[in-house]
Image (cartoon, rainbow, N blue to C red; front, top):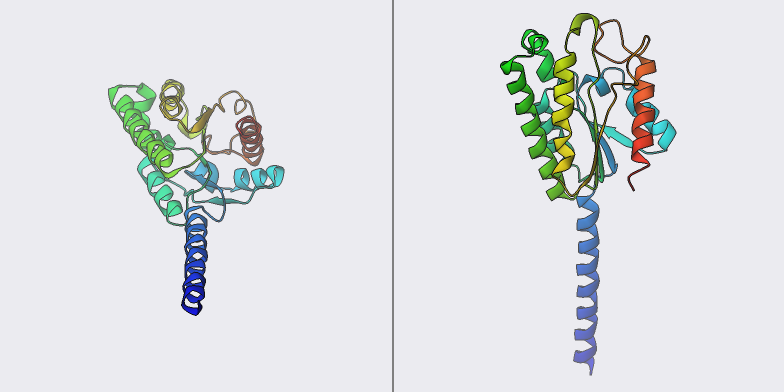
Length: 218
């Protein structure tokens, strides 16, 4: 009888240990902050989109966005974030700096510019596929707007890039949306002096639009 009781106790303790390990593994798999931002200076330069989103949503959001990031760099940002656990919601942008690095070609909207946009789109599609495989539940891609001043004349490139960005959400089972910012970012006061980056006003508008769209996808 004593041997039977000892064996039963050991078995019970083993089951508890296995259960605790499974829960621990799930905890490690999920990021501490379940909403993250990856992207470029639209997010990173003034940080207002992040802070405004946190304020109006009560979410705790980690941003991995970096100034100057091209799409391949944004892919690396996700890998960095992924090492800290898989987020449930990813807010992102990407491809704008790929276009700005080819300003002349994209003002002319020639084949070189189209190829640049196609390459960034392909990298974005691969990234969305990885997020789907990882178990990310929601993706919000903050779309492009019309730049002015130092980056004027890119309207055709922006429109084409937006048409291609739509494909990021068309081929995934993840709840995904491309958030079109072209309308809300037109008009004075929304861009900084360079005509590229959002002003505080523009950043707040985009954060509010993001939150509006985030509430429509459970």
